[in-house]
Image (cartoon, rainbow, N blue to C red; front, side, top):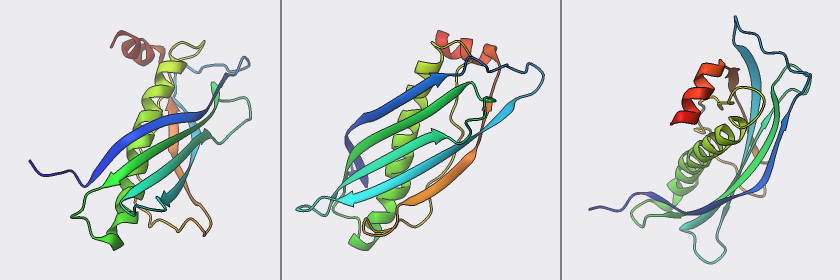
Length: 162
């Protein structure tokens, strides 16, 4: 069996802020859109260029009382790049795939937390991290994910049963 080009060695959350908005009023007839921002920071290991640290920050854009939860998550992941990956391709691989892996973990973690809250479970929208990565010394890359839909209670209840 061949080695995967990128392996997650470890990951953890360094910041978890999920605050329910008591003034939120769900709209049954239409889904509401919530802006999500993401920020990706990459850093290669100082002694091993095939090891990388990725820090992903995910949060809600709006604080206007129209969203069910104010969210700010920061997840750190450590990745190892396979020897067959060319050095110049490593930052792109780590940025696109590493950030996507951490985002998926953040989505599941956030859903678990918000399904225990007073409002429906909150699903992060799908996104991609295909922009070329910037060096650590340069400005950190920022992306705006498509708005998240605040869905129905039925969807949250389904998630709780799973």
